[in-house]
Amino acid sequence: MHDEDAVSAAALRRLAHDPEVPDAERAHAEAAVTEDTAEALAYLVDPFDLVGEVPGVELQQASWSSERVDHDPDSTEWDLDEDDLDEDDGADGEAGRIG
Image (cartoon, rainbow, N blue to C red):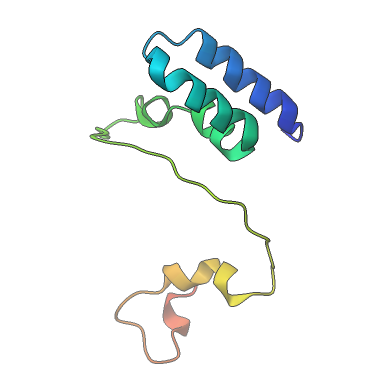
């Protein structure tokens, strides 16, 4: 979804009808989802709903945190192959590369 206002509005609608949010916290939550689209999205997506139907998975605890970052596809920080290496790989790490 590319419409940040729509994401915030959806989060505000859900928040308005959420009986689990105490009145004392509601104003803070409304401000958070209005000011930060990532917070609004986190409010709309329930981690328990994401994995609740996955066989063999029992979610004990979940929380969200997010931040805006600039994506630089040439940066080594975004090298997804880095985590694909096996610990037994040689110094060059080529044995564990996927792709």
